[in-house]
Each structure stands twice: as C-alpha cells, then as structure tokens.
Image (cartoon, rainbow, N blue to C red):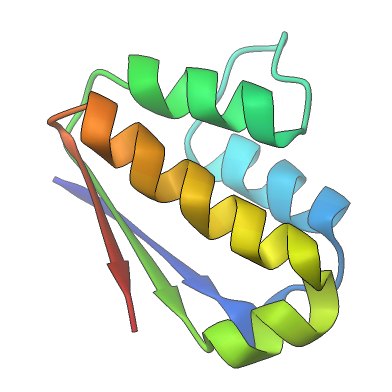
Length: 89
C-alpha cells in the first residue's frame, strides 16, 4: 500500500498542493489541478492508497474555505474507492 503524507504546514497554495499530489500519485496529463479532477483521479486510482493529512489547522490558514472543500472531496472519494483510505491527524 502506498502512503502519501500531506503536511498542512508545508502547503503554500492550492496550486502547489495539486501539483505535488499529481506528481506523487502520477496522475494522468489531463489532470486539471482542481477538486473535481482530484475526485475523478482518486476514485479511479487502482492501487491501495492511504492519504494522511496532518496539521490541518495550518492547511485551513493557508487555503481557507478550500481546505474544507478539499477534505470533503477526499472523504467522498474514499467512500467511492474501497482502495483509498483517508486519515486526518
């Protein structure tokens, strides 16, 4: 199982977050760097994956309302893809 740790303290923008996740998970070239595309890629992800989100308060400071939307998308994607687990620390 692949584990990807997203440290909210290291995130400086939503664009940087999307670029980093896309690179780490080797998303396809069509990945649009937005929450809809993230949902699509995560629900289609074929390997077992655990996404660990830490320092959520820092993530919320940086991304504002987008942090809440991101966490919702991650949880929704995990509900659709049995190979995806989300842990929020």
